[in-house]
Image 1 (tube, rainbow, N blue to C red):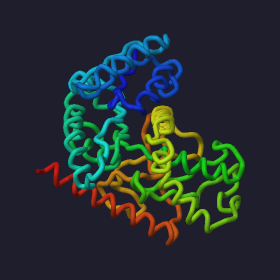
Image 2 (tube, helix red, strand yellow):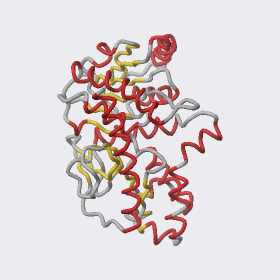
Image 3 (tube, rainbow, N blue to C red):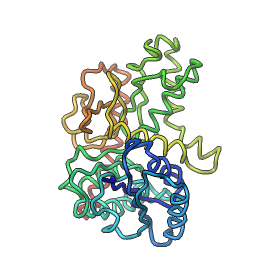
Length: 328
C-alpha cells in the first residue's frame, strides 16, 4: 500500500529540491510506494501543478499519485507523514513577535486539520521557521496525535557541524559521528562535539584546538544559514531538503548501532535540566518501530550547561509568546 506523504509549502525552493527524493525512494524505502500530497496557498497552485507535471515526467515507479491542493481537509486526510515546509517568512522590519503571531495562526489551523483528518500514527516534521515553536503550536492543536509523533528539523545544523569538522580534518562527512545540536534552530543553538568521534577518535583529540571548537566552530554552524543567504541571495534549499530526507529516513528506518542523531522533540521527562513542554533539539536514537528516545547520561560540562541554558531561555520565551496568541 502506498504511503500518503504531505509536503506543505509545495511551490517553494525546499519542496522543489525535496519531492523528487521522496518520490524515487530515498526516504521511506526503495520498495515503498508513495502518494504525494502537495499543499500551498491558492495563488501558488499553478506553480504546484507545474511541479506535479515534472514529477509525472520523471516516470518514477514508486510514485502512485500526486495531488496539488490548497484545501487542508484534502491535504491532511489519512496522511502517514507530514513534512511542514511552508511558513510565514520574516519580512523586512518585522518584529519577532509579529513573525511568531503570523505563524501561530498558520500552524494552529494546520494542527487542527491534522487532528481531525490525519491518521493517529502520522509522523510530523516541522521545517518552516521558527521551527521549534511552530512544531509546539501544531502539537498543541492536535491532541489526538501522540506528542512523540512531532519533531522539528535540526538535522541541517547537525549536517553543517559534521561537514565543518570533516573539512577541518580533511576527511569525509560520514567519518564524523554523534555530533549534537542542542536547543533551538536559531543562532542560540549549541553545536556540541564533546561526545562526537571522527573515525573512532574523539573530535577534541583529533582537532587539537579547543579554542576553535568552543568558538569559531560554534559560531560558523550557528550563522551558516545567514551566510548562505548572503552568498546566494536565497535561503538554503538543497541542503535543507537533504537534511529533511536524512531526518525522515532515520525516523522511519531507525538509527544505526550506537549512533545518534539530532531532532527537535518534546522536552518533557528529559534528564538534562531542560524545562518541560518545549520542542528542544536533543540527541536521540530511533528503533525499528519508529520510536525515538533521548540519549541519556552524557556528561554536561559547565561550558555546555551555559549554552543549553541560553537556548532553552530563548525557546521558553518563544513558547510563551506563541501560547499567549493561541489562547487569545
